[in-house]
Image 1 (tube, helix red, strand yellow):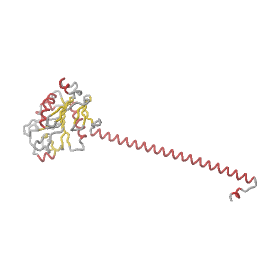
Image 2 (cartoon, rainbow, N blue to C red):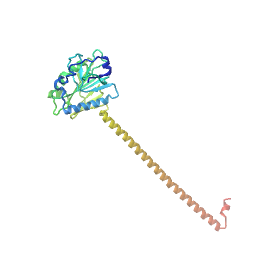
Image 3 (spheres, one colour):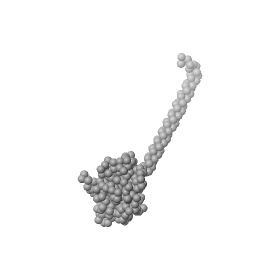
Image 4 (cartoon, rainbow, N blue to C red):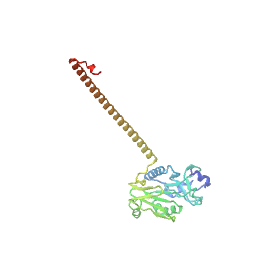
Length: 289
């Protein structure tokens, strides 16, 4: 089914596009995915969804991207898109999103596109698509090679710098793509406020404090661990408080017994004194009058 935001569906009549109903003809073999390709996309989608879960931002994969707004326009099919104001709702057959050049507030260009390169696509990802996404107004574009050995040739791996697997572009003030510089082997994504870091055959996102960005499921598990930790800490604090109270009670009991022993000793001493006085012919009670 076509996926567009409800606002866009109302604002723009749906165009029945040829390639929405003929998906096998879109960009040739780009529709096929390796296992690592699919896993990487799924992971990044979940991380980005959680990154924007409290904002009016959509994260989608495998959706036809149109720009010229023609019935027979050949779409791009980015692996991942991040689009402001995107709220998927089912409408008619096909899966597509059309950039509205005339009404960018209604259907803006994606703020971010990520492509996971494969043996069949890496040259288009690196040579052709930067120009296409630049013309579309995509704010940031990243390409990641998850293959082992890397699919990119040596020249492109050299261009990727320290990562050898990750390259990014960002629109400048003149709406032209500029390469995003590597910093400590990572690329900064202004659109996600995240560092993109290559770790083995994976790509991970970190925030400005170098904390790993999580998926929603990971964040939920972490929150449960934190809550459990807090509960365990509260239980431990309660146990320590109860132990301290028991210690105070025992100390008070010891002090009470000592006080009783002192009083008993004093009472016996007084009785002995009274007995001595009686032996001397004196009535001890008369001395207290």
